[in-house]
Picture: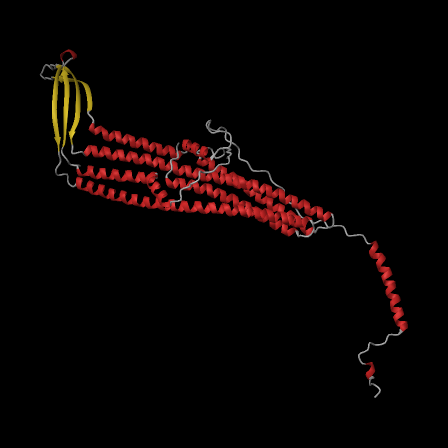
Length: 482
């Protein structure tokens, strides 16, 4: 058959005519000769500048200072203890609690008056006119007479016996005075804790401002590096865009941190009893360490020292004296009196008399007044004892929670310190690789963000330790005044 292919030619490449092969080689040479000079003469393309906006850093927002500040408030950085001392002098809650103590002391004096002798004096002048009238055909008139009178008196009275009724009232008032004093201590302790928590919050925010300022400087350095690499032709426009975006984010974070610090300063000034606009600076401060590890020992100490417990114990004591006084509501009361009185028509003819006497007062049937007072006093005593047990349970819970919070916060500080060291090393490696041209800019941004997070975590942990120590000191009932 004509279409059959010889077996010898199977698997061989088709033959190429020598003339055609020469023409193809010549054309390829011409094309290469034309293309190579054009590529050699073409200049590298200039870097493309990205069109992106960078947010400027606005100035800090400041409040106008008040016209004056107290003379005993120093114009320098304050420690936490100094801020608490100022609050104890100026806060309105302390003033109100001090007034409560004065009122309780006055009630004690009123109750004691029943046991002390009482004296009174009096003087008077009287004039009586007598009019005599008469009638008749002659219309005769009448005549009258007048007699003036002078009087003076002095009395002395002393309670002799009332079955301890008045003494129980005095003891009740004295116990209430002790309760008012412990209430003052409680108000002071609560205020000191609030001031210290606000102090360390303000200090925490000022530290965060410094960290965000450092972050902004670092972001700007990275932006300058990205722009320099772009101009050198070895960087990417996207790196510059990302760098400027990171700078804008750092500006926003710094602005937020500044605002948080300003609001924290306002809160601290208000808790100190000052004008909230008062500029306050805080110094580096810390609370003393709590080295006691026995929680049961801490709880026992708190149950003895906490002003709330002592206030509740004073209320229980006062309620018991109230019950005792209610039992003797209608008890016989014996008192002695002495009197001196004078009376006469004129000052030269005044006659004087002396009076001595004993008075017994007893109401055996009072219509149920004593029984009602007794029931009321007994109910008050049961309420006071229940409140004491409730407060004791609260103290145990507060000490336990404060201890757990402190130990956990201390552990967080140690972990956060390791996090900062690792983040700093990661940033150093990422920056070095990017400068050497073997790393990407996104790794630098991620490392810087991780460092900011680690520094923020560490600052928050340090503030939490100080606040937890202050809370544990309050839970233990440590004295707030030197």
